[in-house]
Length: 107
Image 1 (tube, rainbow, N blue to C red):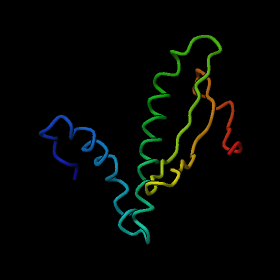
Image 2 (image 1 turned 135 degrees about the vertical axis):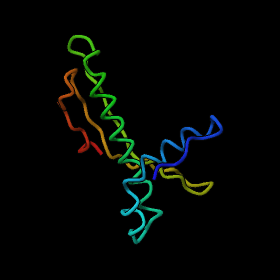
Image 3 (image 1 turned 90 degrees about the vertical axis):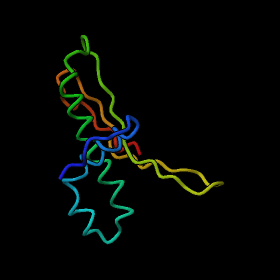
């Protein structure tokens, strides 16, 4: 069941994210490495949300304008070591939401 509405405004985002993760509960609970699977599931729900936003708003891009989408998972590391970004999406879309370039091979 969805998480109850937050009582504190600062908790609203966490509640929203928690509700988005509910469909992935089985995936997370059955994972051999839930600490690895959780950021992947978070990316999937955020990517789905971004695609919905782009789908609704892409027509507002004027003329031959394009939309660049880049997304991935930021991996925090211990102090004194470099952090890491795992790219998952790098593409260009037109104002009809058609993918015109997939640039993931760049990585």
